[in-house]
Length: 241
Image 1 (cartoon, rainbow, N blue to C red):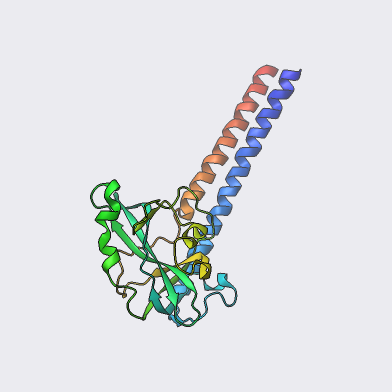
Image 2 (cartoon, rainbow, N blue to C red):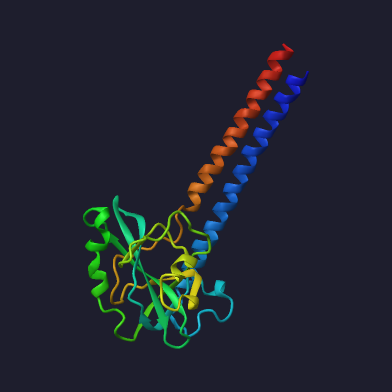
């Protein structure tokens, strides 16, 4: 009797879990669809000049096109494990100081391929230090992209030279490695537009997984729940016979 009760509890728990996971995937699909729609809607607007990024609700600025004026800080970070067309590489992240507010925002300047051996990254990318991007005040355009989740997969390279390799963006850690880090705006990056100097390959992804994949995963979870339910019914009917 106890074994039957435990078996029933386990079967019901598994079915409930599979159904819950299916609905969770559908919710994720809906979230991704809303994000993509919001992006396309806001990308239709003309770029605006912005002087204070943190004024107002920052979420209202997500995916909007802006022009910002200021200077780059010549300290470059390379985000590791960025694959384009099966080629490994990095995204180049550089702080930018707004002339009007003195705020610092991380600018994603685009993707570059891996050159040479990984242990020689600082040597192979020394040219990034000599682009003289910090010598002039310039206006750049692009759009604000949210990076709200915590990325703590790895630490910033302990090498004292630049550029520095990072596994993912950790705003608190980056603040410790740049001048006036307390002025750095967290949770967003500025994705550089196509017609800008000092940019690299920019084929931006809005979401890492589209809504169709989430719907597919939801179908799999619902199918597993249905299969388990049918199995339970078959076992019950067999015992009755």
